[in-house]
Amino acid sequence: MTSNEPAGNLIGAKPDQRAGRFATLTFEREVAAPAPVLWQAWTAPAARAVWAAPTPAVTVAFLEADTRVGGREVSLCKVEGQPDIRCECGWLELQPPAWSVNYEVISSAGATQSAALVTAEISGAGERSRLVVTVQLSSLAEDMEAGYRQGFGAGLDHLAGVAGRTLVLQRVIAAPRSLVWSAWMNPETLPQWWGPDGYSCRTERIDLRAGGEWVFDMIGPDGTVFPNHHRYHEVRPEERIGYTLHWGENGPKHADAWAAFEEQDGATRVTLGMVMNTAAEFHEAKGFGAVELGQQTLGKLERCVLSRQAASAVGTGAAEG
Image (cartoon, rainbow, N blue to C red; front, side, top):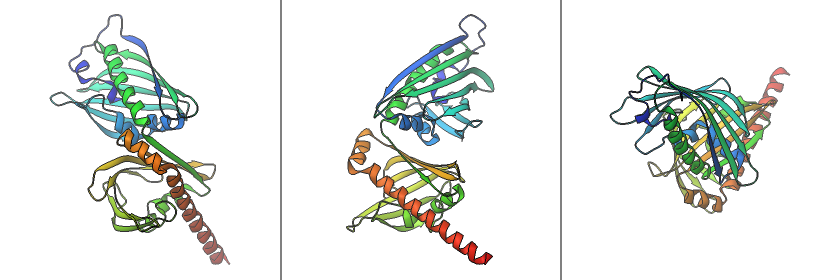
């Protein structure tokens, strides 16, 4: 991916036919997060966007992001004063949460700089996991091995940090994906179920589309008001949404979040992920009961979906009668 390439190692490089064009590189990281969470940090587009840039001087812009077998990710690595570097990643195999295989092609100014096969293996139990990434590299420019070592090393360091401050919640709902999606992405139903048990939402404005936002107050059982602002940057119908969470309207961002919807034997697996801004915010959220409260929120979603499904079945039966 683009984060793996320091720009200076690519721009102006010429084809190298000498020995050393091919290399196998191995990177290992111990991560303070469970394997399923590390898997989400490694594969979820919203999480990958957080850890992609290898240094603060590099900006990574994602043009496409489709993490499924046959899907691809296209990004541009931008450094001031230098040509953009294009990275195309194609997913060849995904076996959550254990391993993935993808190809990666780096190019600049219309010229291919390198091609690689990337295999990631995740293992571990409990609250810690291990990531082993193997890169089979074909360098089409000079000094590519050194660039890959530096770029991948920095990227995986960032990934480990991101995984350590990521919350992942999942729930399987016995309803078609279209019903679950419509309950989430409907401006009337979303405020009805969002939030833990006993909480309600008071909406200021809501626009559930890419580039849209939801400004609202979450009101606790004791009347405490929690101002919220969600900004949506990605909406792929019935597949996933990506958004940022802010403390109040136009307030500071406290998390990058995503929700993914997958069909599973006639049911729908919902994954809600959040990368907190800092490790301190992550530990504070966990201490506050974020996992339990998040599961309550998904439970309210499930009840909303099943209630709508039952009402639809009654209506259909009455029409047929």
